[in-house]
Length: 580
Image (cartoon, rainbow, N blue to C red; front, side, top):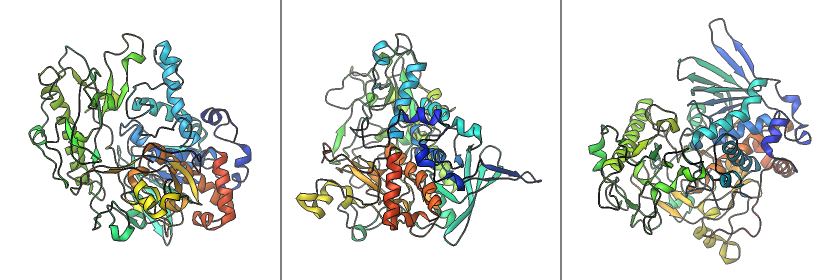
C-alpha cells in the first residue's frame, strides 16, 4: 500500500485507511456504539467489537478494527491507555531494525509521532529537532526512550475522532468482573468501574482479551495454560524436566527519578526497608547475593555480574551504568536550563518482585503483592539515596529525586505493575522453542535451514528479541538465550474451541519459553493489530476466524489484506541477527 504517514491518513480520512480495503466491510458494522440505559440506571453498550485491556495489543486491536469500519468498546483498568509503554512505565524494548522493518507500519508511524510530539511541544536543541531519529532520553535499551505521558498524549490524539463520532467508547478505570458464555461463544462481559462500583454490560459479536493477565480466559471458560511446560511435553531444550503451572516470571513496579546535585531528596525510610535491604533471592541456580546491590546474576551464564551506577551518566568502567539503561530524558537534547538533570526509569534486576504471582491471585493477594513490590521499589530508591557505593568511596546519592509527576501517581510508582507473563490460550498452534530458538532450531532443522526461524504459512506478522525470561515466582533464575527473527503464526492467535474470543497481549499460543521473545512492545502491537483486522475480515466472509486459517484461499486473501495496511508477514531474506 502506497501511503503517506499512516497516522496522517487516520486523521485525514477519519480512520479509513484505504477505501479499496474497506469496501467489503460496512454492511455488517454498526454506525456507532449503541447505548441503552435501563430505568434502574444499568447501562448496556453494544458494539461490533469489545476489547478488554487498553495496553499496546488492545489499543492496536481497537484501532485496526476502527479503521476497518467496526465500532469498538475499549476498557482499561487505569486512567492511561498504552499498557507497558505508559501505565507500566517501560520504554520500548525493540530490535535493531525497528526503524525500517520487523514491525507494522502503524507501529513505526506511532514511534515517529512520538518524535514529532517532542519537536512540536518541547524546547529541543536545533540538533535534536533536526534529528529524524530523535531519541529523547538516549537510553541504552531502545532507539526511542520517552516519557510515558507523551505516549498517552499521542494515543489520545489518535482515538479522539473515533470517540467524537461515537464509533469508540473508552471506559477508563474499568475492570471486567464477569462474563457470559454459552457453548463456544461469549455473549457479554460486565465491566465494573473502579471508581464508582457501577457496572456496564458489554455486548458484541466479537471479544478481544487484551488484559495483562489473560483475565477473560477463566471468566469465559476458555482453555488456557500457565507457567512452564515440561521438556517431555514440548521437546524444548531449555524447558525443565517437570511442568510447573505456578512458575511465572517476576513482575516489576517501575518508577522514575532524576538527580539534582547538592540537594537532599531522600525519602522517608520505607516500611519494609529492613527486609528488602537484607533480602537474598531464593533461586536455582543461586542469585549473586543481596538483591539491593550493584550486582546480579548474569542472565546468560548465571554467574555474578557487577553493575555500575552514576546518576550523572558518567562511564562506570566496563560495567553497564544502570542510570543510562532506561533513560527517558537526556537534558542535553533540550535547550539549556530546561531540565535540572536527566530522568531515568527504574526497571532493573533489583526491583523484580519474585515473592508472589499475580496470575490467579485473589483481589486481596493481588493487592498484597503489588504493595510489597512497591515497597521493594521504594526500598531500592532509598538504598540508592543512602547506601549505594559511590566512585569516590562514599555512600548514597541524596540528590536522587522521585519523580511522581512522570508516572502520574501520588506514590511515584507506575499505575500498574509491569507484567511479563500471562495466562496463555490453548491454541490451534503453539509456538515452540524449535521454531524460534537459535540452538533448538539448528538441532531440528539442520545447518541448511536452521539459521532462520520456522516459516509459517499462516504468518500475520514479524518480530524479534532474544528469549529473555526473568526469575520466576517459583524460584527459577534467569533463562536467557539467542533466538532468530521470527514470524507470528495466525494459529497461535486462535483458541482451540472458542469462536468469538481472540487474544491480543501475552496470552497467545506460546510456551513459557517462547513467551520470552513474543512479550515485547512491537510484537504485542502486531498481535493486536492482526487480531483487529481478522475480526472484520471474518465477519465480511461470514466465517469464524478459525476458518480463515483452514481455507487456503481465504488465508491468502486475509494476508493480502493485512499487508495492504502495513503488516509485514515475513522478514527480508538477508536479515540476520547478531546472535543468529
